Image (tube, rainbow, N blue to C red; front, side, top):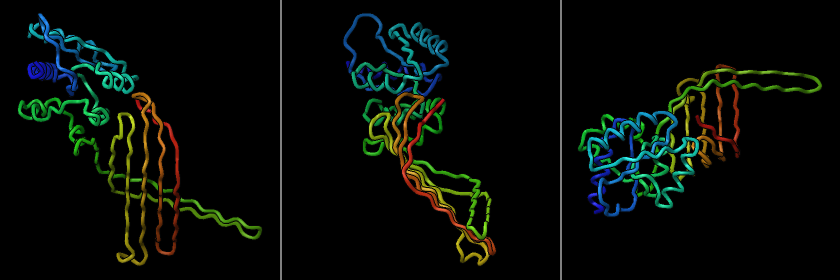
Length: 263
């Protein structure tokens, strides 16, 4: 019966796949029942509810043997509600899910990996966002790895004030940087992220121009809801330059705390 239920859930995924990327939840096997098999489909987004309910209705009418029930989950409460539902074995059979939450719920083994099914069906090219391909399980642990290309505008101001003299210096310049970022979810809603970006013009290139820029950030994030969380981390920022006879350096490092807001 378990194999039959898995096959039914995969059929539902194919039928509703055009609406969103929908992971299948690792729920317990369905009990034997008379009449159509009942499948629950979770929709955790503020928009699109009417369209998904219409698709579920049409699918149920076409298949006859499968009845799809749509469960609407308030988007602002997605993380706590789904965490409780998964832990208690009450999660929907399949659902729409943002790729921003995918790694969090894959880590504990709550989602069934359908990559092989999608690849063989050809639906992966239609319903799987490109950003989803960045998240992978490595030995059962969910990881996220990416790269960073950025340009920052640096404005360094220095003032020297004494009873005799008052000097002021200011340097402004755009600084490009490249680097990488990595994230691992310890438990759902709690992650640790590391980011490193840097740029360097060595003195061997020119005696009049050289510079260095390094920004390292290691932080942990706790998500209270899908929109609000807290963050604590350590950051080290080091920048220095020489432009002809003008030189400067600036270094800051230490712990920080912040609030995370998403919309």
